[in-house]
Each structure stands twice: as structure tokens, then as C-alpha cells.
Image: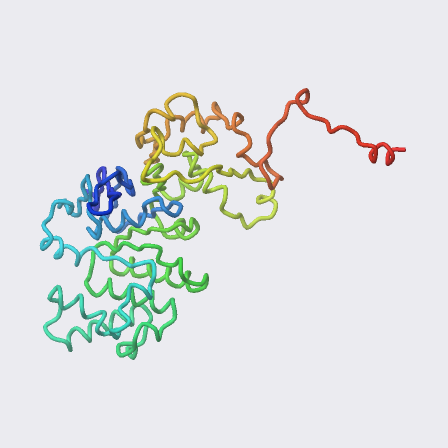
Amino acid sequence: MSLLQLNGVKVHFPVKKGILFDRTVGHVHAVDGVSLSVEPGQTYGLVGESGCGKTTLGRAVLRLVDITDGEVVFDGTDLAKLPDEEMRRFRRRLQMVFQDPLGSLNPRQNIESILSEGMEAHGIGADQEERRARIRKILARVGLPAGALSRYPHEFSGGQRQRIGIARALVLEPDVIICDEPVSALDVSIQAQVINLLEELQREMGLTYLVIAHDLAVVRHISDVVGVMYLGSLVEEAPSDMLYAEPRHPYTRALMSAVPVPDPEVEDNRERILLTGDLPSPADPPTGCRFHTRCPWKQDTLCATDRPELRDLGGGHRVACHWAQEIADGRIGPAHNAAQVVPAGHTEPTEAVEPEKAVRPEKTEEDATAAE
């Protein structure tokens, strides 16, 4: 049985309008029917461009935002239906590492106060001395000195503040930690240290992670299973190595084609997929497939009318695309929309022009003089 399972989770924010009386004129479909499962001890990576609903989904698991519809089943209990007081007790087992390490720490509290606050709320430790001893052990585990207890968040570097955020989650002994862009605000060298720390803690404590990120390299390194989100929906899910070796959804293929390859010959000769158009508004999402307005493989049937469901193509590789198999087999190509595909060796998209329709510029007097 999965430790954490999401079934058709939706988070819709009302759009209000009015001067004297607010009235609801629509909804922002931030998360629109996401289903996934996370096994004990597993790291599930959730990727997608900004605005796709990754962070909102992570907050919905913790009930930091209201769930419009669906189930969030944690260890057999549907968190979406729990009263606030019972949900408060469950939060000890579900913790979050926030994206901005400075903004998530109270600047008026020292580190001991920040870390002991949650312990007091959940009744951990008989007195302050026992809590302080526990905090020192956690700080040592995340690579911070015991002298950090009396210092304030602004006295630490970005990497150290992120370690404090991790320590704050660990002091409550959680089963699941949701890491929302845990290294996006850090330097590359510090990113590696924090990622290695998360992996080491997982091995030592048997933690389960839901890692939310837009850096595909980070997700590939740390994740066992990767889910790709687009405009509030999960469009592809597969074991990490399988997804990176053979992406099936057109959106995932476009994302993977943008990842630099550390080999000049491979980088110069590989195909790039450039998506045209803007990301549609989540307040007015397209009908049918959410991605069909930007898809190079869009077809005249199904894409604009029927919303595809996640279906298993084998080996746990789930794809929400009507034509995923045909695209993978080469039976459907992007030739009808070739302006979005950059062939190997080019840097800009090309568009074929038939010879008989090519327009030749008329010769001017200057051209004639130059020819003579």
C-alpha cells in the first residue's frame, strides 16, 4: 500500500469581481485532477514550468490551501476530510521544506526558538533542556554547529538557512517531507551539498520525499519516480531513468530537448523542440488536451475535444496523450508544424518553402550595376 496517494486532487481558486459586493465570476484551475502515489522510502520528483501548479499541489497535501475536490490519502487516512484539529496532529508526520529559506524563517526568533516551537506544539520533549539536546543532535546531523542555537536567520548564508529549514522539519520525526524547490535559491556548489544531505538523511532515517522542482538535472539525480505537470495536470509519470531515456509526452520531449548535453558533438547534432505561443491561463484552460495549443504533434481529432487520461504504456510509464504510441513509433511526425522543430546543426526553427512558391526579389539598378 502506498504511503501517500492522491486521487483526482483539484484546487480551484475563485476569481472575485465587484465594488460593493464580491461575486465569483470564475475559477483559477491551479490543480485540476492530479492522481499519483508515493511509496515508503521513495523520492517522487515533480517537475514543470512556473505556474503549472507544483507548489499548490504540495501545499494541498499539507492542507495549507483548501482542496476543492479529490482525496489525499496518507497512511490510509483521507486528509482532505479531516477536521482542522485532527489535521494539525497529522502535520507532525508531514513536513515541508520551503523554497525561500529566509522568507520561511521568522527573523525575530533565534534558531533554538524556531526549532523548538514545533516540538512544543506537538508535545515533544519533557522540558526545554531535553528539546535543546535533541535540537543539537539534529543540527549536527545537518552540518551546523551547536553555537547556531542563539543566532538569528540573517546571520547565516543561504545554504545554512536551507539546512535550518531541513532541521526544522526533522525535529518532528516526520514520515514524509515535501521539498519545494529546495535548492533553486542556492549556488551550484551549495546545491550539491544540500542534495547530498537529503539523500544521506533519507538513508539514515527512512524518509519519503516529494521533491518539487523545475531543474531537470536535480530531479534526475535525486528521484526514483518523476511526474511532469503542465497547466495543473499530470501529463507523464515514469521511473526516473525510463523517463529521461525515452520521454513519451510531447511536452516532456520539449523539456528534455532544452537540457544541455555536456558533449559538444552531441549538443550540436541533436534536435531541439521549441514551443510556440504562451502558456494558457489557468483561469480559462483549453478544452481537450491542455497542451494541444502548443503541441507540434497536434492532430485534427481528439486533441482539441477530448481530455486524455493517464494510461500505462508499460513498465509504469504513464502518459496523458491520445497519440503517444503513434508519436513514439514515428507514425505521427511534426512535419505539419515544422516551424517548431529545430533540426540538428541549426540554432533557429526552419520552415520549408516549396520552390515554385518561393518569391524572388526583383533586381534593382544597384544590383545590375554591381553585376556588370
